[in-house]
Length: 241
Image (cartoon, rainbow, N blue to C red; front, side, top):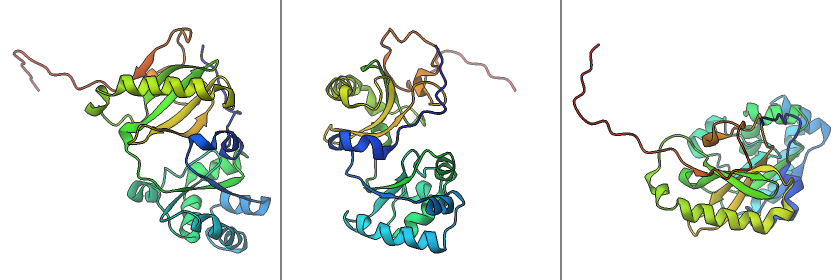
């Protein structure tokens, strides 16, 4: 059955304390109402912007190198900065500007879904190792390739291993999840460790990716879904225009 969960969201600042050992180290800066209004309006400069940038200095300096900044329920993946540099920022000024330029971030703040800036060490992640996990009643039911840009041949030989590791992780942490029925985005490190990236509500508007639709029998276990390799066409082919 298809369900809509437009009013459900899972804030990183809420679930991090229970699952910190299964995700990237993260620091948080809480915003007051004036600062939230400034971020929602995309105000790059001014009193509130200056105050937040001052408070960002210490948590950002605690991580070596560049950082990745986002808010509780939205990452600025819709910005030129993310397209060009995958979101890496070095200074509090660029971090604040990056957030203000993101429509996704501004909308999350306007909707009251986010009141923290979250800071993580920057890591250039490999797209083939990002997955979306579909967890129903505390059990992993399905798993989809996250970036649907193309078929990744290297995934075919590792999909059984990825699935088995994901099943074990869900069994281990099911009692810590924000909800027993939930969608979890993860990243497999090169060493095979699974790191939690984000949580999303079950059903619309969360994208089911390779599962294609929420209208299916979730008593079944679809397993891992990948973009299939391109088909080769053989035989005599006549094409006319």
